[in-house]
Image: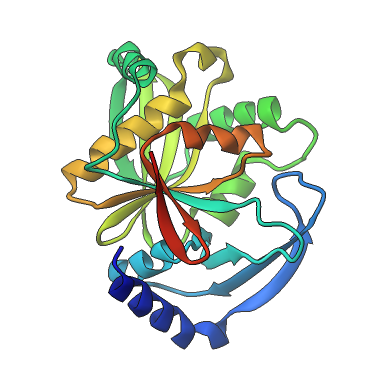
Length: 242
């Protein structure tokens, strides 16, 4: 992103600032700080405008666009891959090869008993006791009219192993969420998902794949830093990490 691009994005976001509010909440990543969501709800955003938000470090949750404005914490750092320059490590190449027996399907976002069962299994394994159901995730987090969103399913001999939720903008893809069957953890499906999404983004002539937040203090979010080179949004500037 050039300095001109940064200026254009800043001006664009500033024009929409009256629609945003700061909403305090418990930290969704379990850190001992007050979280503050800087957010606004929209019925629809054109893909080019969605790109502007992603470039400014915003994420989507339902029909809400948000960024984190926590007063005492800066752990959430937006991270993205430049699709043409990212190079998987040798271990990632092995993960990619290991999962070539999977059948991959792309389609619109939809709920099915099979997906809900898998997501509930994943949530109960990763976040036991939270009480949030798969239907809560689909109805309150995944489904939206704001952006074009699709699901990518990963199957082995017909069995659903994982599902990736992805937002599509004009020049980028944004990884929203990925869930999988914990019994197949040795396949490193989370890593394979990102590798597949980067290849998909390149095929669709997208410049960037947005991975959400890199949070070094949270194991479930820190793994993203292994995908290099990547860029981090620090003080409103994307800095490359090789």
